[in-house]
Length: 453
Image (tube, rainbow, N blue to C red):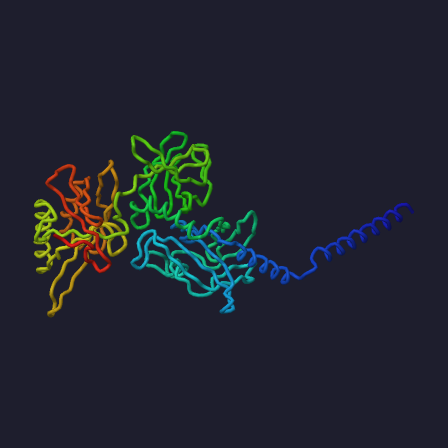
């Protein structure tokens, strides 16, 4: 009898338990899943627009493995009441695009929306020059990939003035942090970081990094695009980073020799009466040393060298070397003639180097080729410029007979410099003072700002 009573009591408790659970389930959600997502979309949209200055987006590119690195980006969301639409204004600092130089600002405005697509999803809906730059297919990338960046982002959460995103196509996790200053001011500070690093950039790499010091132990580093490459315990690490208004920030937290860090902020120090740029962790245990910036801009400006000008603006030895490669060019290419101007600094391809122009006549019309040898620059000591051959550019292999001119410039490096006007500089070899040449800054049409003598 007691057994039967216990069974009845247990059954009653079980029914009561399930009844409570069902009642609780009914009170947890008073709205359908669709209504809850729509409410979340409205909430996120209000958060996006609520930031007075907009947001700093840590925008990483290069597909799922982040093969390129991060770009400094700001986004400002607002209502366009006149056109009854929602807009986002973007501001990027890019490497190089369509004749725009390294570190150039790239603005764009487009319509956006937040849709339900596996969760609240931020979508850039109309053409935007900045986002289009990242998504346009390029030769170096797999078919259709572009620079491997998303224009749709799943919003995963919001906390502490930070919106967490995940790219819909490549799955890259990113953050948008609320700006505490106008976007223009933020980007100007970020541009300052670019200006320190950019003189050494070749194809987006930043080889101005001299090395990483962790607890006073030196570690050799190099860069590939916006990624830092170093070795530890026989393993190679390739770590993407982004430039910020304070310095640089890595995509992942780094741990080297037991010291962890993710951000390295710019700190200027004075040593031997020389100002040095150092990127340092908050605790000061990690330092990334950077070469001093070039005293004049060879990265974003093109300069002309005129070897055969009536009034000499190069030394006799320099002129003789140019005449030699010009004769070789005529022999090799059916009487082609080098024009009396070489470009030094920014090349037509957006790299840095020495550019020749070779001309010939065909069917009564003048035609020609541009031949580019990529160069890198350094500051070995105060008031000197180092020049080094980096790689072959456009048609350099085909016109390898011009290489002796490049080797001549490299062999006589480094050079002291004398300003002969705001846009005219004379470079003099420290190895042989009889080797010198004058560079004239060029306008966009290729003519010098300052008249030659």
